[in-house]
Image (cartoon, rainbow, N blue to C red; front, top):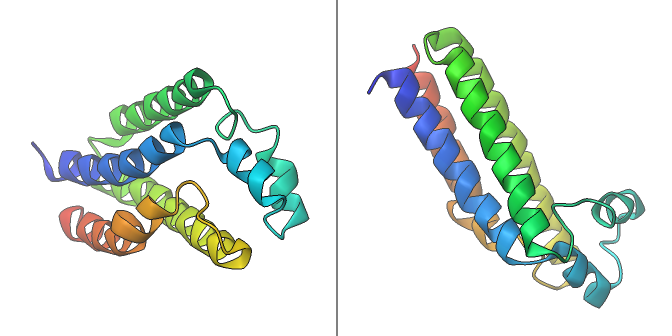
Length: 139
């Protein structure tokens, strides 16, 4: 296993752990109970989003498609330390922003938004560790 493969494995593991929670728990059902996230644009984004819907098969399909795209990005970049560094870093930073959103909305609504558990652990600490490891491995 090369260092690029290790960077991709860590990235996929971080993303996969969080996305498994998104499959398991319907965000639309949570939003119906809570009423609003407190952010109208986020409410408007969640309601029609297939990843947030009530049907677990659709949510699993969206996650499978995401996994396919991550695999494709891996296949396209795995021979380049620079490409691996930048693409995996972008994914980890993007997911870290999503982790912050989950935590913020949970605090704001005084509820537990689906995705919050894995945003806390491994979530933000894991993103920091994976980000540092990516840059160590791909130097």
